Length: 240
Length: 292
Image (cartoon, rainbow over all chains, first blue to last red; front, side, top):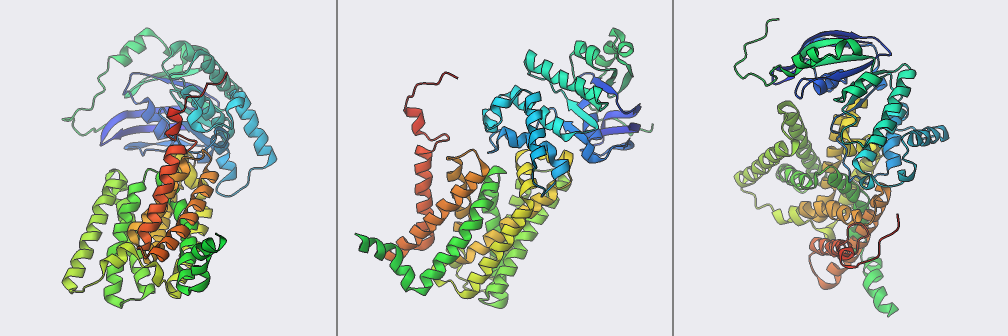
């Protein structure tokens, strides 16, 4: 599914993700944890090919339109004159593209996605009427419609209430049963334990990547959170 | 009463050919300018429209100096100037990772500076006012045809790019994550903006051309949360405004572009006060809240 080959990602020549080698087989559910500035979001951006590697490469055996990416801070303009329904319907872009009309089946799929995130009452409301958590539900509905084989979620549960959180985790569970590959950045270790088979701890370099119960130890966490992550202005050229 | 209305609204147009040409060209522009304006506003580029209008001015001046008063030459030269400016600001901002409006500022000022320099060196007494404010009562068949052709072309391109354009305006990161269309759609839209401005400026001048885009867009946003309704309202309000504006200008011998803009601003103020979305009057009328 995904091979990281000596991957280095970063900005202005400073590495954020440094010499990463790993393999994620299809159907895996991976939690990515680590300190702020440790390269979690950068890694997801790299997989979503929003940034280019400084060095090394990522081999992904999934076509681009089968990858869905939910950024940490979405770029949505909340005042844009569009209804919640229309926002969610965009998830069918991979099928509809520039010109194709939405068919009856498409509308059924959209309605079912809206029901899964329990936004029925809000469907015809404009975006600006939605709360932060409701927007997140809408974005999950859009992800459902994207029908992707590889799903990248960057801190999807920030500022989300308990019930919404549970609803969204249930959707993740459903995706796992459907054998989709899921890579999620999150900070709640009990959620990591109960929902994700594997865990990748990253603090610029991989601290540990294996089965969650093996990885999630106090020792690994201490190690991850003790590494200095600020870029060094006087750093030498990396020869590794 | 009916006679007075007839004399005011219909007679000048049924009687004078120059009035017919003025109205027809303005109604054609009303089909495209508000749509361009709405997307400029939604993409937070309202003032970039202004900058681009300055950028095409030197092109027009160069066309005039080289080929005289040929509609075709002036149109082509302004198009080239506008497209060079938007393309270079897009390319420079992508390479240097600076926001596009700052590089646009650099390039439109460069264009303006070159234009002024060329005009002053050539020693021509080119009538700048003509370019700034247009001459709606002197529309020739040539201008009318040019303007209609450009409008049809722009509407056609808009129809093609509308879906990705909406996504790119609302959630650019999502479009980037599912498609490579983003930069292309943006550039295509900017070219439409340039063409729209070029089509407008021979009729109402570069300054007012921006008004015909941005003011209807801001008016319509007071009345709906639905994009298609917003577009419809913007077009209708523009058509009404150009019609009334031109007739005022005809009857009272006022310059036409300011009349049109003043009428549009009047609708803006009405919407600002009474608009169902965020009109100020709703802050003062206390109504009881609903149960849910």
